[in-house]
Length: 130
Image 1: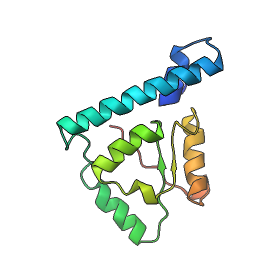
Image 2: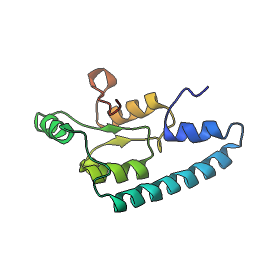
Image 3: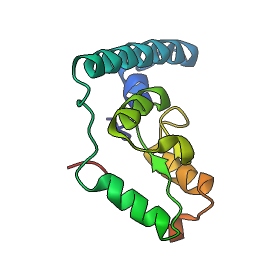
Image 4: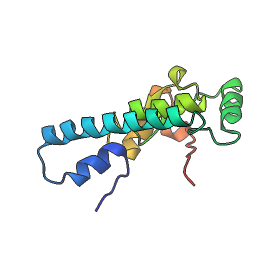
């Protein structure tokens, strides 16, 4: 069974008992193909990846109030960068941890907090899922 739902974990799980090097090679190909498809979708519809209503204002308010923000995502860094850029999220100035760093969602969240200079005890995680 699949315990982690991150881009890296999904690809590695689908490949089962393949050697690690083969999993890494296939993962790179899947990631590149996904990034090309995201770019094509964005070219067809520039509004394809909008921020959720109020999300950007909330991020700005939190930053203005002195909170450190970071991004933790189960997506790969190149692919989430396409979506965040299109949505207007100022991610290039924020610490980020992604599936490119680790297959484990818990490790990704821990790393994002660490890169923001915070402990998990002082962190609040806000998700984008429904």
